[in-house]
Image 1: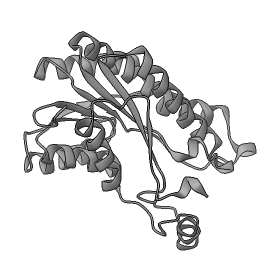
Image 2: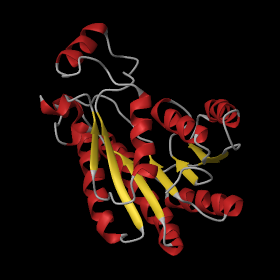
Image 3: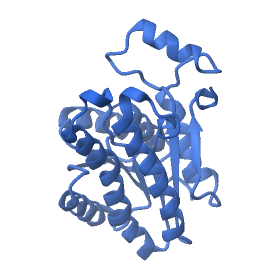
Image 4: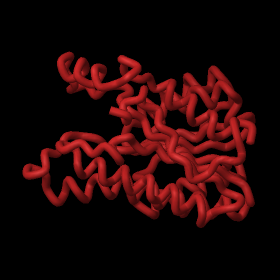
Length: 244
């Protein structure tokens, strides 16, 4: 599958990793659809940057944890383009939850956004792809799905679910829809990370540095255009951190 002129929906693409993926694919000629929930201004800024690189993007607003919002976004995209070729499930939440201080709302919040949102996107957009007899889904997971961090258990569980969903859907949506995941290590550190914490992360990473959003974007482009014989795979983009 070539990126040129393909309709590609990227959730959470107003900023950070989602934006980097959008910019890379727009530069390659994709018809990018930017999804956002509340960050309309950032989404518009990203849209302006994409328009300078290729076709003007479509902006869709919605809450990925709600089925009705997915259905609305799907109809908006189909009205504009008549098809959806690629879905990148990037939107997610991430924050510290020491286990004994975590709450049931925390647990539900992570599962609703990080896992249910991916499930709904794969089902609702995947249905379009099955009808088209062509499509690719890329789910952004995390190396923490395997190397569970004790202060981030609800987050890690949600990402482990994304990997299980990816592998199951690679079978369920075959042979026409390819489903893969990218598992980033540390890229784009959160604003509340201090220098000492960053140093510890780098020490545990064989490549001795933090990754960039562009590393994830490159992996996404490869899964779209690099091969049509990869499905059910999790590509780790972590500088070797998962080896430690």
